[in-house]
Figure 1 (tube, rainbow, N blue to C red):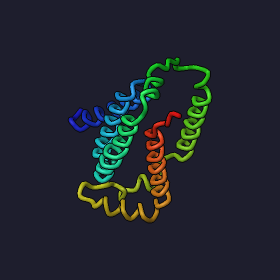
Figure 2 (figure 1 turned 90 degrees about the horizontal axis):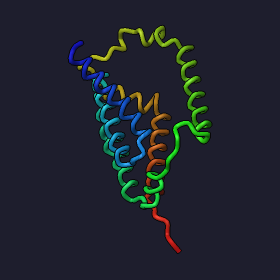
Figure 3 (figure 1 turned 180 degrees about the horizontal axis):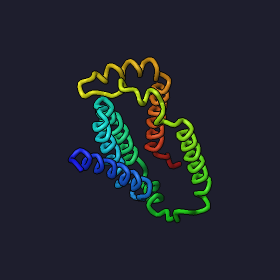
Figure 4 (figure 1 turned 30 degrees about the vertical axis):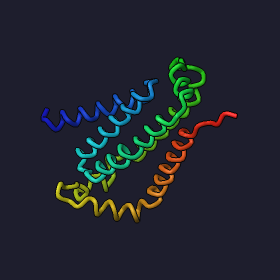
Length: 179
């Protein structure tokens, strides 16, 4: 096992472990910090995939932007919301979790069937030797052209999603007026 594999497995384990802990830790401050670790480790994995532009974008947009937005929402939230989230005790498999678990399992089943039917190992564009990215390729040019032509609709959907996150954070930060 060489040093590249060790670093890759370190980043992969860091992503999986910190993402798992983000979901299950009840302390909001630790959860936000672990989300930062998850996003930063994902940027490290993008570097190993020779996607340097996406790694830098990951750091700037998500680590720099979304995380700061989450921290401001946390800092501006009222103390009663924070106390309610810390006191709430619930077991992992309660009756109120059944619809969410059902939807998650259904989504996983659909995803698995789709990947199985697509047979990704036999796709011609995957096996094509021209799809191998070299270290000296100008990937930013190709990403820009594809982003503004082929992937314009997903790009706009992501911008709407970020706007919804901004509106949600400002709604969380708004304090209720007492009459």
